[in-house]
Amino acid sequence: MINPPLIRMHGITKRFGKVVANDGANFSLQQGEIHAIVGENGAGKSTLMKILYGLYQPNEGEIYFHDRRFQISNPRTAIQLGIGMVQQHFTLIPALTALENIVLAKEPRRFKTLLDTATADRTITALAQQLGFDFDLHAKVESLPIGAQQYAEILKALYHGAEILILDEPTAVLAPQEIAGLFDCLRGLKAEGKSVILITHKLSEVMAVADTITVMRSGKSVASLPKRGTNIAELSELMIGKKTSNDVRHQKISDKPGEPMLHIKEVTLHAKNGRALLDGINLELFAGEIVGIAGVEGNGQNELIEVLTGLRRSDSGTITLNDESIVNRSPAEIRRKRVVHLPADLHRHGISLEDRVDENLILGNHSQPPFCQNGLLKRRAVHQFADHVIEKHEIRSGGVDLPIRTLSGGNQQKVVVARELESDPELIIAAHPTRGLDINAARFVHQQLIDARNRGKAILLVSADLEELLRLSDRVAVMYNGRIAGILQPSQTNEAELGALMLGDSV
Image 1 (cartoon, rainbow, N blue to C red):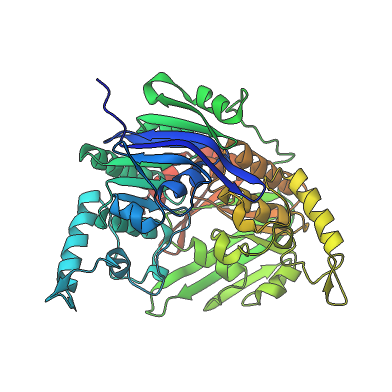
Image 2: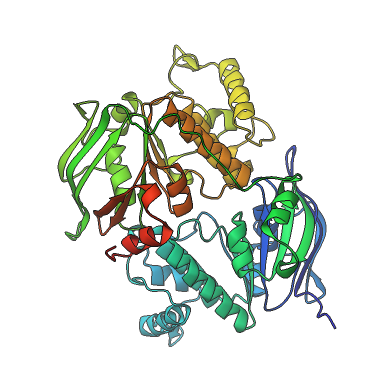
């Protein structure tokens, strides 16, 4: 006898203006299962789960919990029902510690008024150990690497009573060994009778950990099937609506790079407490070359990018671009040298959420011709450029005049990639450019980077996806504890070797 579903969503439709994000979608979740939701960018995966979590209200449809109909009007209602969500862009307060964020709004008290920090510390430390999470609970969130912030989000959801845990692209920031640890954690939660909903586009991970898989396409749920009855090829076809090949090949014109373009010599950077964030970095990047940067989050990759793009001042060392010093220049000065940055944190550094899609597509060039004349924005020129870029880069948008927040996370990412590559840069600093993208979208970005390389551009590619680094890079540098632990040729290494260097092991 099949048990009735724990959660049932029926006929869910959600519209954002002209955009239909969910179109009569259905979803069922059993107790004690890991249920993956897969689909292309804009397929409606995150929107459907944000409705379940009370962040959005559906225009049509019904939600049943233990066969009782509920209206989940806000996240507080969802939390009361035992539903927790870790979103793609985290909701932690940067100025508070991880522990303070986790217990926020449910702080243990003594005598009903005094904060019982000792109890909070013991409770969360025990929960973290149970899940295999190892990070400093007393560090401020703003100082934690992204992987540790994700652990804090998971702990927060579970501490607040989540029996159903929704994870939106949770492996995008993790090294292979950390992904294995996360999956062990999810299996442990399943063994305790908790249910996990995993939103992802990585089909190999789905096959590794999920029990049931729901496929979404164009806002509809097109299939829901057990893992044991399917395979990656079938899931890809269901996602895209046609057969696709997993054998993605990118043609490099030449293996010989051009002239030296970027020189980084003995660059150091220290935190306020004196800890070395960058410890004598030496690296050379040539025209017509992609150099990949691998490393577990928090080992200096972000700081290196910030120093190279002018977002942070180094303490010592030299950085030259085409024999001209750019060390400790402003972001605007560095951009004028035809250096572009594809940031890891889109919402902080890449887009303006409340502004229109077309306005976001000209950010950085908005005060220059042909978009501006005598201090006035030329709307027609902006609109024409936006239409061209959206078609060329296959960005799914309900209209260039809509706020960019109405786009899916993957399409927001594509806006940034398209904007920066359209400016014809000499040096491209790309931080996780395919994070959260589906198969076709990631393939498109990969081809854009390869094409730029073939045109003689220099590309520094920071990624947590080792397969991506090995496929695209001419050389891969591994960072550990603020140092470059090794520089390897992709043809002469593998993911296991890179993973060992990332964790501080010698190879």
